[in-house]
Amino acid sequence: MQLIGESDPVTGEPLTVLYSPADSRTMQMVGGQSDATVLENIIIDGSNSAVAGGIYMLDTASPGPRLTNCIIRNCTWNSHGAGLRLHNAHPNLIGCTIESSTSLPDSMHGAAIYLFGGASVDAFECELRLNQANSGGAIYADQNTGLFIDTCILEGNTSTRTQSPDSPESTSNPSEIQRSNTFLLYTSEAADQALG
Image (tube, rainbow, N blue to C red):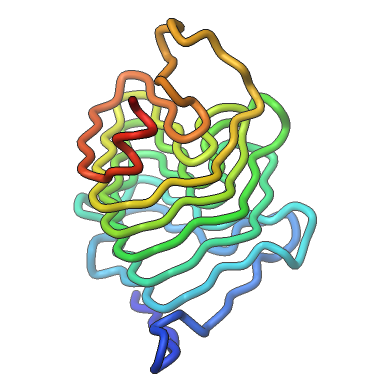
């Protein structure tokens, strides 16, 4: 599958918008999608409904789907990963933005990106900003996951949970990245600051 939208010829910003349906995810990729699955110049917008999610991926190939110059925004979801939820999925994000998304209720994690069950994500030149969850406002990585961040910006993400700095699952800034049993490779200055 290839879904390639229009982009502004001057700014390069994506112009094609997919609005999330009420009480549902905009897109689900379940079972075997590879890097031949491409989303490019697409905006996924959850502002159409009080509860609407971005993308859910389950059991993709590795490497998995490729998202380039996409924006996922304004998603509110009653579980982990309002913007992007990955379960044994392995996408590549290039120049993408995930913003203004919230995982509810108070016990949910990883509003922008939630990884679990062996998932991994490669993110290059992405922005994760203004997302809110119980912990890991930007990213929550759990259950043998891999997180590869290169030249990304993480800013203004918040965690509603206050946590002791010496907690075994705590990072120095749980508002940005929360991880447990996760391989983390990062070269981003913002990620470096988030992890202390």
